[in-house]
Amino acid sequence: MAAGRVPDPRAGRRTSLETAVTTAFDPLDLAGLHLPNRIAMAPMTRSRAYGPGLSPTAATAAYYAQRASAGLIVTEGVQPSPVGQGYPDTPGLHSAGQVDAWRAVTDAVHAGGGRIFAQLMHTGRIGHPSLLPGGLHPVGPSAVAARGRIHTADGPRDLVVPEPLDEDGIRRTVGDHARAARNAIDAGFDGVEVHGANGYLLHQFLAPNSNTRTDAWGGTPQARARFAAEVVAAVADAIGAHRTGLRVSPGNPLGDIDEPEPEEGYLALLRALEPVGPAYLHVVETGGRALTLELRKRFPGVLILNARAADRPSGPQELALVADGTADMVAYGALFLANPDLPRRLRTGGPFNTPDRATYYGGGERGYTDYPALAAEPR
Ligand SMILES: Cc1cc2nc3c(=O)[nH]c(=O)nc-3n(C[C@H](O)[C@H](O)[C@H](O)COP(=O)(O)O)c2cc1C
Image 1 (cartoon, helix red, strand yellow):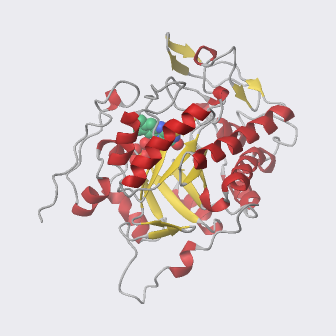
Image 2 (cartoon, rainbow, N blue to C red):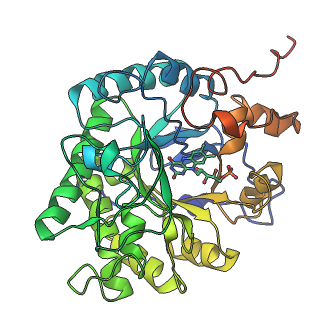
Image 3 (cartoon, rainbow, N blue to C red):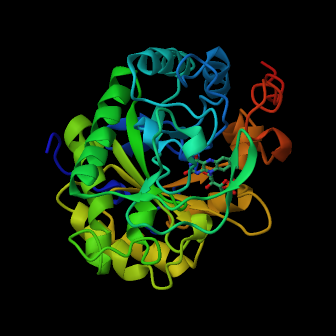
């Protein structure tokens, strides 16, 4: 492995005998990367990669630079290979042109004092041949289609039966993630988050209804965890475990995933990652708190929690998750999309701009770079 184990971020946690409690506004050492606060911008696909060959634009750079006060920005899902693309106009990190275009984004964020990880998102069976170049067809662990439809240039279409990855295909796909991770570092990113959540390729391997394999990558929770562990290990080997994070969403039904008993598989995944030692685990909490707490207990690195609420985007209430020790860091999606200066607004208790769902995906600068920041503080 290129890097050793990550130091335990909880080693320095204050005890109840001390008066001060760690809050989301305190700094955090993310495996050697200094974060000025514990508020992360969650990854959000925006489908605006209008640059040549699916690359980000000057507007992308402006959008992320506006949000540089995050302790950590995690980008929108970025495909590690052409076949990993599931939605229109999402950016990649598999060509030289894309690397150059991303460099302008990371430069802008760093110039604004921020830190930024690229989220590598291979959508697997969530995709459509009409979105893919050169006759490519979506791939997956098994020939099992997700129920549901996907947005294409010709409107919504049924999801297709994916081409199951054979052993060579698995090795190629793992290698694509490692190469894209190296590209991310070349492009100036501070690290990479591997997307193992929300019904995409890694999650499809983890779940028993999308992975019906009987070889070394399926059949038991341990075997189903193998692909995700191999991808994380390959990325860590390529760029260092201290620059590698993993996002998971145990039990999340998105993408027609059914994980009735997720615990065993995710604990097996953490065990497989013990010799790798990724810097962080980013949990999208869609089920109960108990599994989150179990993962926190077993994972020695930083735990980022995106606590999804059924009826609203996560908000100021979630700050308490750092203070009460549930997580080291909290991630915000919709609220960060709509509030470029979110840490400041959280500190002052608002007010908050309201996210506009109509401009989430595609379109121009409206709903992208035009959400206002609060007026400058008086001197
Ligand atoms: C517009 C939009 C796009 C999203 N795209 C991604 C993505 O590319 N990768 C990912 O892991 N999660 C994605 N998510 C999920 C968010 O990261 C987050 O988990 C979700 O919005 C719940 O958090 P919140 O209540 O703070 O918004 C997306 C969410 C939104 C609103």
